[in-house]
Figure 1: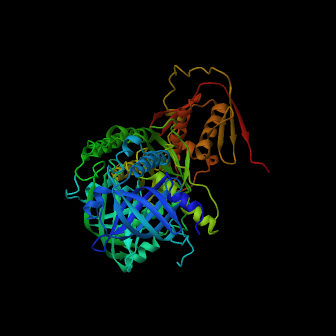
Figure 2 (figure 1 turned 120 degrees about the vertical axis):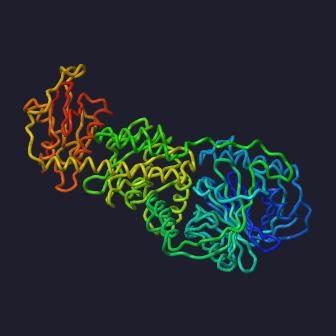
Length: 161
Length: 472
């Protein structure tokens, strides 16, 4: 049973999302993700938006039927409180109108939060988000505290360490 | 740049300043990925990076099982991203790379008061396998991006500019001129609009500001404890400290501190206040040293993230070296004069009439002096303390009792009430500190140099002197 603040952080507009996944060759590969939404709570299932261009160069495109391990860390840009979820990604597909609306809302809020906390000007930050995204579904197997400090790596979902 | 263009670490130079946390993805032996943030990566050479994150235990375990990682850097000036694939090569526990990494960690620890928490045990060195650029606003296949962003230009520290500044320092005839030329020259020739020069006190415990440039208040006489902040850390470690991510460091340390405080491992404490600019994001502090002895610290700072490069740091080291040598030369000459045969003070040139201060005018100023620490107040406003305060009090008493205005450094420094140490005293720099502090405050008192080792106290109003003796 997750503390209520964990789902709130995962979906937070001020949360910066980063992703680690496996390439077809079994190597780690880092990217970012945007507009994370919780689709189901039990078991936890998320919908996230990944940069389409980068993912295509990796050989993973919308419509592909593959399933692959994926880790997602969301960090609050002001406090750096962070949570990491791990599971299996699947169902890569073109974003829906709802996805794109969520993407726009998240980008605007995140850039404003970064401007407030770190001082980066909006006219610079606006170049950061990708122009095209692809949607993915993540079936979550485990949830971890990822906040910098001695408790980083602790399970938050009651699972074995 | 496009994703297909070859990329080297030179293009990522701004990314290594830590202004934006780095993403690191690893994978365990069973194929489960892990992703987290790194506060900073250290560039070893054109083909290697070293990582020092203190709290990435899962990443470290993964790397032991599968020694390859994917890093994601974000350029804070262009928003271009770089995906860097690396492979573990070796672990170092001593040597240049370890020392450079430890310097970064020690600086972070000192700036946040968490020396017991941040401690480098080893430096893991990784070999570069591949760099892929992800240009800003050009991430979708075939989509045109926004026009290239041109970062705000900065003045590169050319050899000619450094040489010119050193030549100006060499031509400076006294300490007052030297420190003014130094901070002005840093702005004019090297583009450092905000700078400060601090000297080490007699006890070796504090640094006091002798000159600054580019601030609302010059801050002459303000002090920093050795070991505190970027400036104090440069003094304590006697090594340059370069920070390009002060705000990120503050956030990171707050988060770490909160975690440890909740675990009861350390006591709550305040952050070390940042000197100078209220929102500085970049700073370089370099020690002034002569023959291994610390003289002071020269520091520059900027509101921009990742403002300073290794070249800026190197240029400042050259300037600091010349500056330190000049300061020590002036002090040596001062000490030599003390040991020379006495010259009668009557040979001091007569005081010419001062158009502004020839006749005392204006209301009487109340000068209050506290003998316990030399702190001195003018009409209730704090002016200065320590040796500089005692020098002023000595001069004012002689002015009141004997009407004297002209003095020699030599006679004043022998006044036992100044409480100067027998060895390596700072009389000249304290006198200049007093002079600059009086000028900064617009006080009705001035100190004017009248010749080598001579100066004049100019009093522009009536004074009422009051000494507060130590209680008990």
